[in-house]
Length: 123
Image 1 (tube, rainbow, N blue to C red):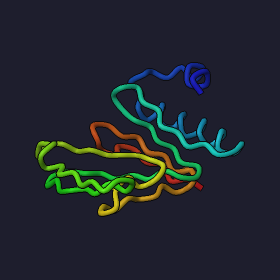
Image 2: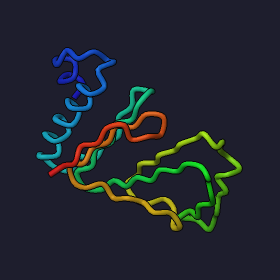
Image 3: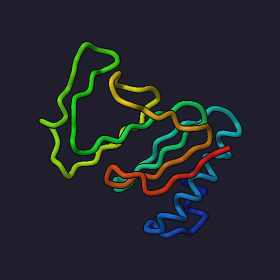
Image 4: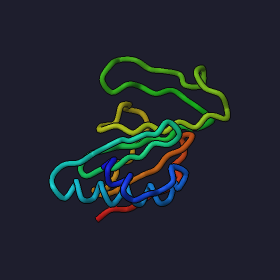
């Protein structure tokens, strides 16, 4: 994938071009088998689902969340500021009292500062 990105000659600042190239590479890899991935350059996060990824965005007003695998509830209003936006991407929902969205096969997201800034709907 990195060789393909390098060969494309795209500027590291070309967000749209990089997203489109990452989607193309991911589609090709998914055609060969299961390919779910998260790739980050430290500023943005690329997520691609061929089978199973879920996403959840939290923003103010923050509330509590109950973990799916433990009898623990966290109060995110005590851990965040009103300006925070947090998006979580995982293979399965991590909490039981929040609405997680399953990504469709072939769906890709590009996130920056917790917000989805680009989306590709797959197959």
